[in-house]
Amino acid sequence: MARLADAAPGPPPAPHYAETVPKFTAWACVFLTDQDGRPVQLRATYSPSHPWQFPGGTMDDGEEPLQTALRECHEETGLMVKGPLRLLASVFTPPGGSWPYGTVGWVFDGGFLTPEEIRSITLDAEEHDDVRVLAVEDWQGLMPAQDFARLEAVMSARATGTAQQITWGWGDV
Image (cartoon, rainbow, N blue to C red; front, side, top):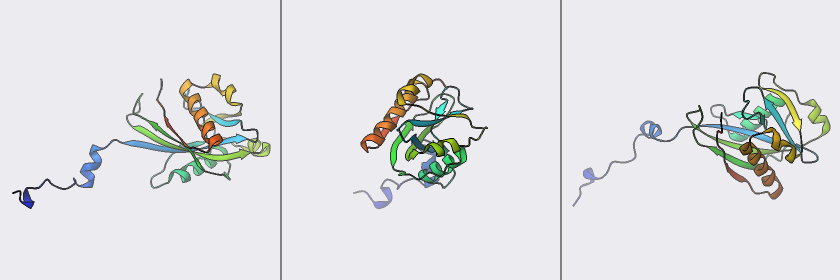
């Protein structure tokens, strides 16, 4: 009969266990369209292989995904998003390219912008140098296939009300 002292030890201490699990970076963004449902995207100055992006960025320590999306959208466009702010997609990216970690991200619905709101967008020149509002099909030639597939999945989530789970790859970063 096994004695209690001979039983398998309990879970490892948290710091030790933390060293054994995968590491991820996290981000969140806001998906916006004009009143005709055409996506609004920003051209990143720092990512020639994935130039067109939704307003968003990396989470700060202790920040929740929705807070990140709202903060980053405001920093990158000057807009205070009204919503509906429902989750459209979660995005998983395994480690790859020159980045040693996987990433997890959330895409929130920022709603529809008026023409005045679109004209009021003020870009942070260190991050973005253009903003465009185009029909979905017009985005296809401007972005890698996997980025366009993500755009289509987000559009589908908005149309159906069902959030999407997207696995995205680094491509040739």
